Length: 159
Image 1 (cartoon, rainbow, N blue to C red):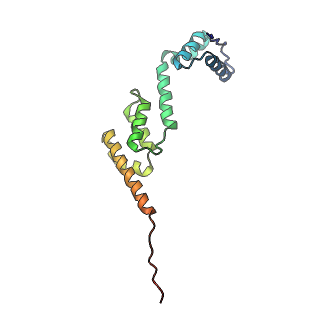
Image 2: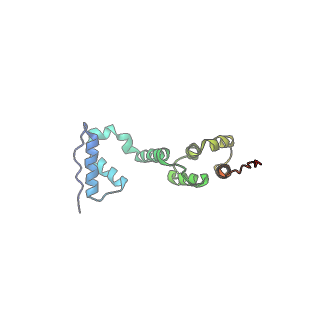
Image 3: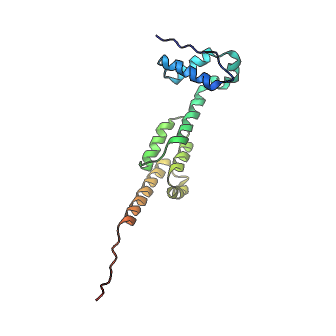
């Protein structure tokens, strides 16, 4: 078994210190964020613990912020139906991210034309809005296909 050796914290170079600690975790096959957190807190000098006491007291709040950040930064509609994308965001958000935040993130990732129509549905349930978004998306896709059809131009014959 490989033991984790957490070096003393380097206040002038915290990025390098965290890289060194992360390498120790890799060598020890530690992948759990909770385990990493516990190792760091257990080995951190009390002077620095006082600086980050809010994180130590409430580490779950930090994880929730990271979850929301991931939702904000990385997720896109792609080729999914709007309702599928909503379910995906809801699964990422879990039960701790309020529905109004998920709704706002989801709406913000939809095409602008769809957003404009859905803006009139502020009081509708999220499920109903998702179904309407699917209908709008299908209608837009259908009209795009129709506009791509070649048109035949009848050229009058010259006698």
